Image 1 (cartoon, rainbow over the protein chains, first blue to last red):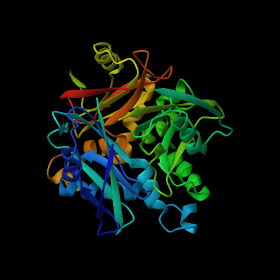
Image 2: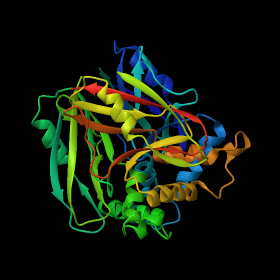
Image 3: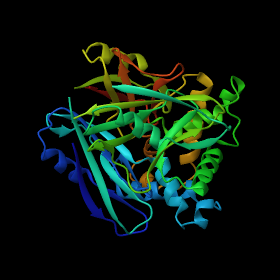
Image 4: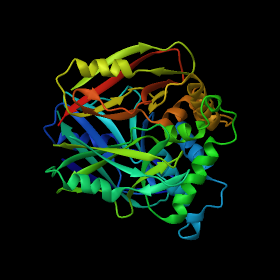
Length: 132
Length: 132
Length: 132
């Protein structure tokens, strides 16, 4: 089943730790063992799993901004957010986490991160849980 | 179960919207709620989910071409398509979409895109549907 | 169910083919048709699926090193491995492979690759198998 939660973002570009929200969705189900797939139904934000350290969050935004910056993008003639679409395309809009014993199987430092690239906006996150 | 469809590409580099084909595979099953995983069994094409706007498709190819261009790649001594392999590695060869009410759960502007990086070729797409 | 195997890496940066290990985990189960999701519970290594050709493995490390190099990263003030975190973020920490007839559905040249970006270390790989 897929359950959805919403969250507001507050900046143009921002990284938000959504691990607790995803774990909360899992806790409301009786899925003990299986797979958790998290997706965002948006084209200008993304998901990834890595450490939540303030300097590193800054670095992720710097990296993505650098990779998609400095070009005269065609999409900017339609809507002024080509860089946000391209950054989301590079990072991707889904992550997967195994579920064991009713818990997300994440490494010690791993956290589920939502990357806002065209905020502030209201974002939705879909959590799909499959029991094995 | 995994169902497969094939499609020809017509250019060296090209982005093709395969959303209708994937939805068509889902419609042939009785999966009402669960997870759809789309994969390509190729090393020089990729998948992503984002908006299908002509300018943006051009920008995605420009971005990927720029990121993997300008180097003297070792693989080019074996086969002259290192950039296609590297672009596919950056973008990835799979996407995931929740299924609810027998439909793909995609955002308003989200479309499933196949990126040809070494065409024209005949490509295959695998659609794996898991019911929850 | 999720099964785990461990493997040591021997270099700072290295690409390791883990296809046989993943196939071995699948062979120990009775999953005939479904989905295999492979994840790493680490923040400085990554997974991708592409060809295992020595020149190309070198190129992948060159590409990632180039994309995340040359910046004064904030995370380096905490721990001297920001580039490894950022490379892992770009490549991602999971891959998906359909399962049919008890076998991984991979293209002719596709291999599952683990990218060590901050080794040598002992790494763990989680293989989650969902039967449909």
